[in-house]
Length: 559
Ligand code: ATP
Ligand code: MG
Image 1 (cartoon, rainbow, N blue to C red):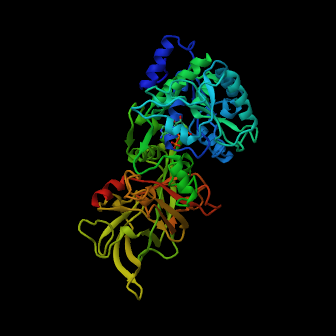
Image 2 (tube, rainbow, N blue to C red):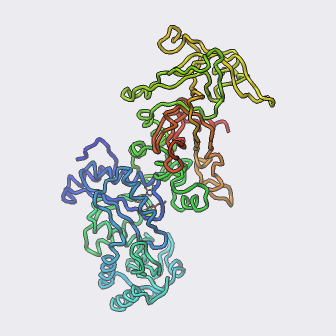
Image 3 (spheres, rainbow, N blue to C red):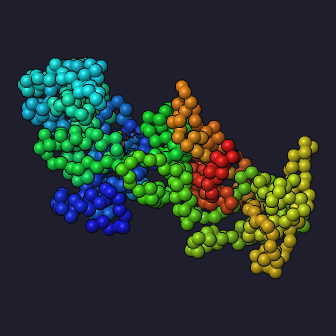
């Protein structure tokens, strides 16, 4: 039985199989990425599902690189995928496998099918094969090479392997049924000739197996029980089953589920690669990318991604999840764990005219109201402070309750101040605001409870650190980035304001010395993480992980 309350149609199948003692009580899943790009949030869903089932049913989970295509695969991708799977808690222990390590075995299996008369070498080229494949309503035409003898096929296949033929000259095809209503069963290709080096096998091979032929064998060799994949493979399942039955080998069960789609996000590796290659982003780990590496760098926690994957569940029908749900998940996690701090992104200088010149005092601040164990800290206060430009209006609009001439606000953890005078330069630009402070209104004093309409954040000018802050927004302006105008593609929907860099942000001392990867809430502003690549010792660069509230929904309505 499952150890958790979690339930979905796949867990139900696993439970039934266990009850029927189908695989001698074993549960063994795998995550089989092709190392042709970085992992994205859709892969996270697959990892959480496969690993989660193995964990919940006390089974095993493998990481297996499906590296059967030599052209697009690279070691960089292999390394990043291993890191990401581990980061998401995918515990594969010592079970890291490569499909390419099974090439010899696959070849032997192919020879077995040839000898059984179930596979043949075909000389049709790609075009001819397409023309004879038929359509959904029309059956295909049999290849003129279909009835070669087993001996001839065996000989030709060996010569294919030896490199006697150029790319595309021949293929090995399964001999199934050109009239099958399922096009995948119309003598599908098992091997193509590709004279190209493989990232692990070098030049050892020039025939490479197709996905359908390779995948079932990989699952079978690893004794996988439940081979979980996305819906587009549903029509391939009869082929998966046919291969394993004809080979007479151990036969796992393929189960399909709906892939994750997210609003304002592209999740196709081809498109993500395009964003990277054409430098629309700084790399696969750009904090705006929906890659695991991008989210991690931005400051998302693995817990929040795992929670998100659990919340959205597992479905049999494709649907699109609102990206706000992912943002909700990260907020929920950070609200519990991120330390509160004060940072002023667009500083405006405040001078407290009645505060003694050289004096400094400390204000006691709560590190996290959601977590008592986080304790308190002291923050310095003095005559000159910074507040955010947004918290002051010379001419306040209606219902504006923050600072404006003649009004009062409370400085969080500090005093109530009143705006007395606006100081401008020769061009009429505000350079500072003079205020008086009420010395009786600090926490613990008689006037501490005096009510004013707003509380704003601030930092002491003399003690503030100056840091760079990067405000990230959604990478695309359209809910469905692929919904582009005639003749244009998803790139035309890129958000031109997805990154805003602020270089003059004023922060309290604890932030000035923050270390790479540390996460904070900037009070009233959002959650931020110290960038692991751009930051230097004593000069942190902060990435905005997420705003405090879903501001986007409101902005959308205005348009
Ligand atoms: P893409 O379509 O972007 O090229 P892929 O499916 O080819 O992705 P793989 O490396 O083959 O990428 O994926 C590894 C595993 O992750 C597969 O089992 C696949 O079904 C699953 N997967 C990929 N994308 C998603 C997604 N959006 N949601 C859920 N699972 C996914
Ligand atoms: Mg794939």
